[in-house]
Image (cartoon, rainbow, N blue to C red; front, side, top):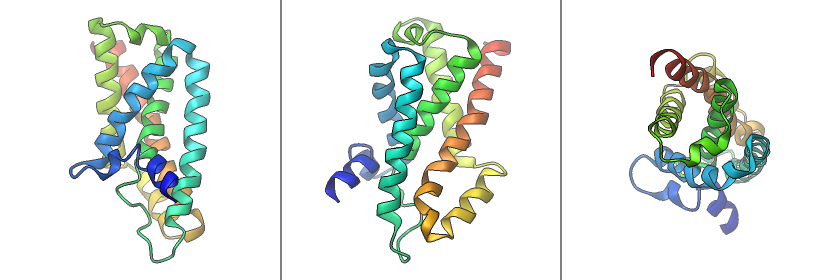
Length: 170
């Protein structure tokens, strides 16, 4: 159980006192930096693996019907969500992942845009994301999936926003 909490909490970043979701999202950045040299396909596979591991860990931690359906210390969903936002953004922008390893202004714009866009959609949970989140939180058997899926769904409009910002504004 200790290892499950360690993984689900993003190496215990989810236990930091303020804004655990933001801390979890920050943890995703060095993970992405480690994977970027291996290409978009590797980042995509790692995102899928992160989602599946997160689903399992979240399921185990929310299985008790009296448990919080989405504990704030579980931040592996934010890690998977940021990773997916980055994958989709790079795909839409037709940018090689290695570009993000540079210290250029353009690279910084991508990182900041991905981070902020994902946090906006993760926190606001626009329709239909909040409805799906509400429904899955109410069903004990699907809580673990519910913990993960709202962040995965938030990655879609977040990546679209990043694409729009970097294509038409920046």
